[in-house]
Amino acid sequence: MNPPFYLPLMLCLLLMGCRANDDSISIFISNSHSAAEARIEPLSAQFEFIADEFVMTDSRVPFVRPYPKQMDIAETSNKSCWQPNLQREFTALESYSLDTLTMKGVLGDRKQLWALIYTPEGQLIKIREGHYIGLNHGQVQRVGSRSIDIEEILPDGAGCWLKRTTHLALNQQ
Image (cartoon, one colour):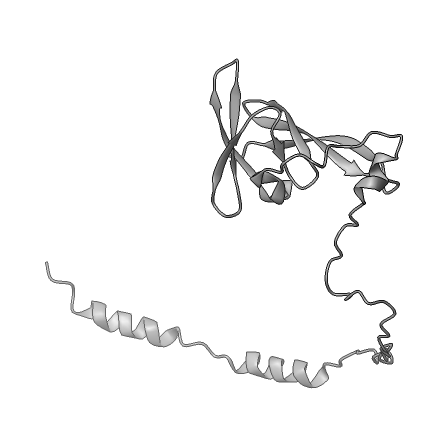
């Protein structure tokens, strides 16, 4: 079936009739632009910053984190409060803060569980109850299937030490 011969002619006429007359729109836009007024409040005076000159009053460099004060062994032995055993050998995991270590899993049975600890250097170390971990002399109290309970020892500033319990949860990434 061939289309009727007048169909293309009607299509051309239809498309020519769709040509829009946009003269009224352009006149409206130009009138709106000429009548528009901008209401802008003036800016307030700019604050003038005056920097103080840095005067170094101490020999410590202010841009480097200070080291914690190390107490003398003779000082700590005279205290009547509880003191940790600082003469013991420190483990590799005690050179990392707890927030940089991640627990990756657990090995063992119900009698003895070992936690797998991942260090920032990519080393995997297994620990159990009684082992030390973290910068604050943390001792592992319990190894569970989803977390490790750690008892940290913190100095109170007066030569004594305080105990605090914290947890290291299993990271499942």
